[in-house]
Length: 429
Ligand SMILES: Nc1nc2c(ncn2[C@@H]2O[C@H](COP(=O)(O)OP(=O)(O)OP(=O)(O)O)[C@@H](O)[C@H]2O)c(=O)[nH]1
Ligand SMILES: [Mg+2]
Image (tube, rainbow, N blue to C red; front, side, top):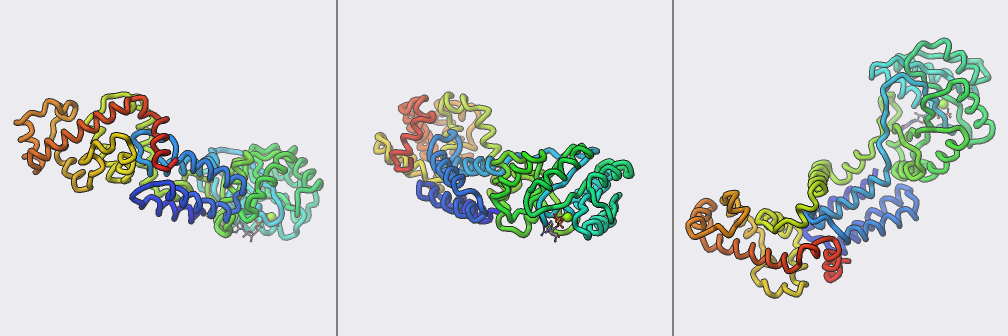
């Protein structure tokens, strides 16, 4: 699902610099993929605008622009795909409903298998009295899953079957398979309401196949209105290109997707896990480290914005500069850019590495307050890092220049607003 988003995110992550063009390319790729998955076009356009704006707008200081963009996309996709359901492993009564061929009967078997594997005793009730083969199909699944079964091959009234099944079966998880229709007509509404009254289910799940795409929204809304559902099971996620659109449609209509069906076998049932889709797109390790960083920043925003500019921050900044190549562009646009001929704009990766080594050789005291670094300390640091004393001096000078520059910016202007100004000057905003 959303394979293209995944690819384009990887392409984007691999870029050395991030500019307006790169963001636009990413947005275009995401658009194409979402529309292909049958996500509502209006929604896609809204989302694209948000990604464009937020990607090039304010960012948390401490995140590189690239990381910021990825975080924006991550959050948007997560929003789109909705919440993770809480699936309780506990005794309950479940009613499955849905239109013809949605996967109700198969899903009934899968759910029974799911709860049996988790230590509960499930039972299936065959309440599809329309289709003669429905009884046999469910009985077979019950045998296969090794769970209890109740059905009446000749029955005509499904509510009566449920009523008797409730008495006959002594189980923890009772799962009722109902009949489908071509559409949610009066007949089906009535049948389901009656069954609801008899069964009084803890969970009424609407079963829908992924290939209906965005019309999952209307279907979920009308079933909810007519018979009251409290969850959706999306089947055939393995065999439809529209699964993404169907899931998004559910989440935007406020219908919680509980499970997804990923094949025809009993075991092909998963609890819906939106985070998994999103982390697939971003790549698990990248996503984790990104989110960790964001979390850190979120716990300490004041510290980052208001504290003295330290050598530690200088180090982070260097890492960012070499990573994104952004600072260079920015510096050139700023009024004092010209005053720093050999400053950040000339930061090469080689130099950044040399600086790393030098800073590694400093004591905590020296890192906190580089002004204590005198001649003898300089010699010690140089020796420890394989640099010469000139390079140590250069690093300190470089740091002081940057610190001055940061002060000119003054603390407040490093906050969100001015970042945006800077981006605009660069033609990125
Ligand atoms: N690939 C795939 N096929 C599925 C999945 N779930 C169900 N199917 C298939 O879809 C077809 C219909 O499934 P059923 O469970 O009979 O659907 P139903 O809603 O009970 O159908 P009716 O009772 O006729 O309304 C069968 O061929 C199933 O094997 C799934 O998650 N993936
Ligand atoms: Mg069926």
